[in-house]
Image (cartoon, rainbow, N blue to C red; front, side, top):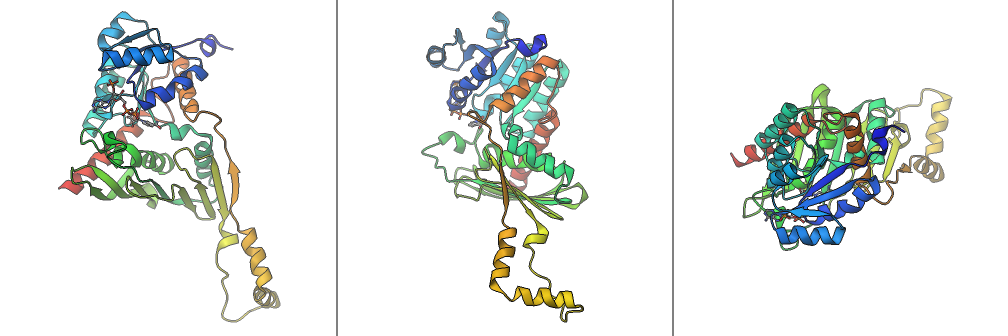
Length: 359
Ligand SMILES: NC(=O)c1ccc[n+]([C@@H]2O[C@H](COP(=O)([O-])OP(=O)(O)OC[C@H]3O[C@@H](n4cnc5c(N)ncnc54)[C@H](OP(=O)(O)O)[C@@H]3O)[C@@H](O)[C@H]2O)c1
């Protein structure tokens, strides 16, 4: 084992909400020491510190980083405050793991990326789904063209959530279905097909002006397309299907957290193609066999999806965190799975979709 693989890194957590609490056992599992927690409200940070046994708590990130030894900052406050915290941490010479969304606009995301490149410090957006074993497999099958050339991605992510239950999702400052949900779909689409060349976006807004439903049609290089739908209002299929020239690959529900991949070979599911007149004895035999319902049933059974499970274990955020720790160990400045350019491209799509619709 190298020194870096056994080293315990010190993290400070910014934010005391649901996600910060969810990550605490993940840090413990990954062997990270959380040495501080910061909140706008000092009392809340003290309470969080006491629940999770964190030695220090405070209100001000910049002052905190000046006075404490820290390797990395995990940012999990409200989305509208991510960019400011990320830039402050990078400028203080710390690595940053920032919850999604890394920023709430393309301009803000550009500032974070500039700060990361200027300081040379590691910065990664927490697009955790891309690190799940099922997603790794999905992307590997797509890249290896195991089912032929991948041409279309059809993905949706949605279940109803009301403003009463999750008011922050409906906040004009950092809420909206694009930043909360479509972000995962866009990340997957770009990871499969690369940058987006053209986009058509259909958005539906609440009376308060927050996007709550979105359908995106993305065109990528080489005539590849992604059809993405995200919703705060409706239960969707919560799957992602990659349609390829020789079959399909599907991430089964729940898409965000999927542990199952189904695959189908086109030859087993496409409808029988009859020639007007059989041209051989063989064709005639096949034609008459198809007339038997039992044969059709066998064919259908053969065409049933083949399913494989890719468990992530107890904690879906662990693969993402382990990747980030590995990057810290190697001194890398960005992730090859969630590079800064991916975060930037996602924000540009979101900003442009919102702007187009409001024009
Ligand atoms: N990776 C995932 O699966 C996942 C899941 C859920 C959420 N998230 C992301 O994690 C981040 C935090 O989400 P969460 O569910 O933990 O949110 P949350 O519980 O509502 O709040 C997180 C923090 O945001 C700050 N905050 C809350 N309301 C605010 C307001 N009105 N104005 C300014 N700040 C406010 C608070 O920080 P202070 O302590 O400083 O007051 C709070 O500790 C979000 O970016 C979210 O998208 C990711």
